[in-house]
Image 1 (cartoon, one colour):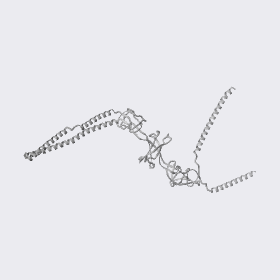
Image 2 (cartoon, helix red, strand yellow):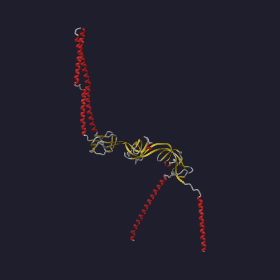
Image 3 (tube, one colour):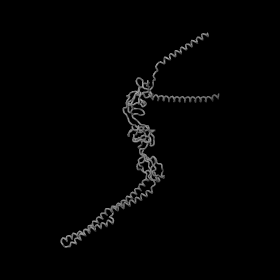
Image 4 (tube, one colour):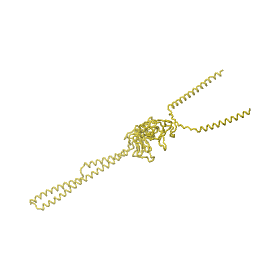
Length: 465
């Protein structure tokens, strides 16, 4: 019996060895078979024809287009404020008044001096000529009379000389006297003309100069007085008023700030490559936290020069109808539309890849269940989609998910994208499950409570027994 057992063990070992050799041979034959190609799971979507806009999104700081920091030109105590923070004011409205009693007195004194100088000027213009001019007029009249008399004597003696009634020497004496009278008359007339022309002009200039000098002093005093009346230079809202009545207002130090909140702009700095694509008038949007819809705006300024510190370009976006929620000093996201392409071939941005050698390309899901790489020319681009100028046609299925790093000709399996409804349904199921669990827990707690109550009620009875 023992011999038979040893023989069986030996046969069993020989069979196990043969089975192992057969397994090795079979494994060697199977290794020669060709390995299967890997299959990549992807998602695809057809290229569609639609409009696409190139947008530039950045952060911007809100500023009022019009702002005035009001500062007095003189140093004086603040007598009274006529507005508070938040008050709406008009251009030219009185905002504050400084102490001005001394300035008012100076202006009144200067006004009196000016009125006196003006009266003197009027009297000088309307009054007669000075005494010197009057004397010259009398001398001129006398010289003219003497000349006329000598002219008559000369004419009479000339006639008598022709008749032989007088000697020739009397005629020559009359001729000499006439020449002297003519000379004196001409001199007197010239002197009178000079005095009338020059003397009166100088007198008028003197009176006019005194008048203008006093007028200038009066205007300077009135201007100093007006500086004590602080008025608003623009329409707007008072946003800041640091000092109080009785405080000293220092010259050129702000005491009020007025902003025109009807026109607000968002200032930002963008790279010059993006700024080249923008033009004044391009549509834009300003997003404000708390508002359901963005505020419509437009590009109002693209700086013609670079910022030397950051080598960026300053851009202004002006809100068309500012919402009260948009306030100066806020940092807000701004989206500017640079250009729009209509009826363009558009694919999702995730479907476009870029390689150093291949450039821009997409992967098309072929009917042979393989990914085919196609080089494309890209046009308008934004965060969600890209315009394909050429390379593919509308309707071609491009790989949108799972195509990164996939070589040309790779075997693919196109899967349908997960629907949001199913996810929503799962969430609803989870909510219902949670609610059910809560109900079960509450029922369990209630049952425990009831059990405790029953036991508590049973104990007294048990004690009585």
